[in-house]
Length: 345
Image (cartoon, rainbow, N blue to C red; front, side, top):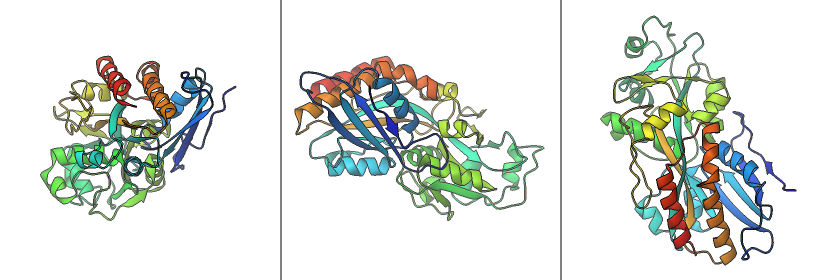
């Protein structure tokens, strides 16, 4: 039987997750049990846990360890060559890719919404406009009863208390998706905070490690507001705000609205996507990628990585909907599979 263990559970208190899984005979190149070690984004951790549970039924002789330390950590470890693969919700830059001595490929595995979560007892269905949301996280709006928030929420009993923003303590692709959107819709936020996995926040925010850490901080902080991957908000029953999109509609995060936002995404040859303000749907949505090397010193590891990617982009995609992640379009998945098959050695 296959052994599957994980320190990750869908709770708001965990800050680092480790997913261990066991695969089976992948080819004649893998005659004995083989381990691949990966690290990176927390955004897809619930999905990768599910992948693990299903993959173990098919492949019993290879173990993969994935440590959810944040996208920034995943990128750094790929550059350093200390892992066999990485995970990131922020596509590597040209400069970062150039630092990887064995070359690197980005493989999109899923997409999803970043929910704005808040803790404001008595206030339901909070609406945040394109002017208000970036102003909160750039420090221009500091109290919940600000007239600009009230204008979007007629009849709501907004308290006269300070807004306590909660952000990621670690380098984070979730933060990249969030700040990429706010920068796209607000010049002040772009100039003051900017786009990044670990930007210089100007609000002296509360910080939490990983999506679970931010969710936990918001849950325990009255007046708190933060951002987490949608599955964390849904599974932990956190209040989520309705965010105004480019069409002017206030939209709640969901699989359906994230799919709508990402439907028009154009994937270039290297599969890197930086869209910050989609035309429709839920506007704070993005992708997550595996980062795999072009060259491995061990041919068995190269073969194992190719088999892993093959499964994730075929059978694995059928699981994405179950955990509120968007699928990678088949045409794109087929292209990515072909690129990995021909370039990973």
